[in-house]
Structures are given as C-alpha cells and as structure tokens.
Length: 163
Image (tube, rainbow, N blue to C red):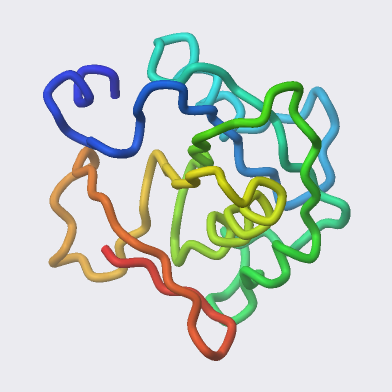
C-alpha cells in the first residue's frame, strides 16, 4: 500500500495526520478476539501511512454478520448507526479513515461514518477497505485493482457502492 501511495495511487485517501479508525466487528468484542480491521489499521500506522490508530467505535449490540447473510438480510446502515457508539479520543481528529477488511455494499462504512460525523462534525471522514466484492465477473480486473468510489444511502434504507 505504501508503494502504491508513493506512485501516486490512492491519492486523497491517506494524507498527513490521518487517524485510522477500525470498523468494529459485527459481534460484541473482547480484547483477545481477532479483529482484522484493527490489525490492518495498526499495519497502516506502523508503515507510516496513517499517523495513529484510534478505536473510537464500539458496538453496544451485535448485528448480523454480513458475510454469512443473504443480501436481503444484511444489516443496514441504520442498524449499524443504532448499535455503534463513539469513545472520545484524547485528541480530536481532523481527518479519519475508517478501515475495514471487505466492503460489499458499504452499509458498515456508511454507518460508521454517520456516527463519527455526529461526534466530529468538522472532521473529514473517508473509508478504506482492503478488498471489495465484485458481483459482475466482467468487472474483475485482478486482486489488486484499487479504486476510489462512493457509497450512497438509498431511499429504501439500503446502500449501493460505486464502483
């Protein structure tokens, strides 16, 4: 990732003084649980891509795990908002990148961004996922094909990610 940044790829995602906030797990967490987004965020910090990691978000109640749910049964952005709280940081961030392992439609990232925006309305918030799901095999360009896109909240409460 650092090499891609040095080549000018992913511009606008990781810039100076960015705080990495790992997306919380779907279940209530325990300190010794595997938490891939936290591990990714820590790797970004140790390689100098972000300035620090803050675990600002935590779950107050579990949501269904999207990876094990049918598309219609995945948690919505509103369900994420209703089950997330912000832990106050020692220093308020100016820029946050929410780090997740996989993005499908973007409900988790949008829910996290909504809660963080409520707590830090002046803060710039973006999302980063190590992998993205691609439904149309014709759009698959390879395992390493980074893109910058948007996540939109639909009128029915669903979300859509482009690309």
